[in-house]
Amino acid sequence: MTIDDIARAHAQLDRALRTTAHVIVMPTGLRLMNSNERPHPRVRALRTKALREAAREMAMLADLPHLNRAHIYCHLRATNRARRDPGNWYPSAKACVDGLVDAGVLDDDDHTRVIGPDMRLAPEVVRGGQLVITLIELPS
Image (tube, rainbow, N blue to C red):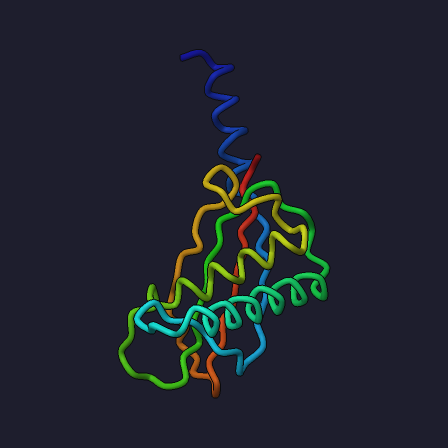
């Protein structure tokens, strides 16, 4: 390994550590989808559409820049402090990520552009429940 290789590696690490985070706070009261539920397909489609459109609108209101690559975290603000598995709300997060693609924040949500969405449980409790989406910009 030469000094040039080391310098290149340090430059890459420096670029990787300089990241930008963008946060979208979804509206409260949206009917979130849980993978343990088994709604009628039409009901599921309507909920998916509502989440997707809300995420698109929130991204456009936030005037988010286009991101080539991102790591996405989705924090669930639950309705109470009961124990829960945040991964069960992945269908809601997926619909929101699709809304970000619709808004032009991401070109696509495939594995080459997006890591996640990684589900987390937020410490805050919110009446009606809420999702908070954090996009960490990754180097291209």
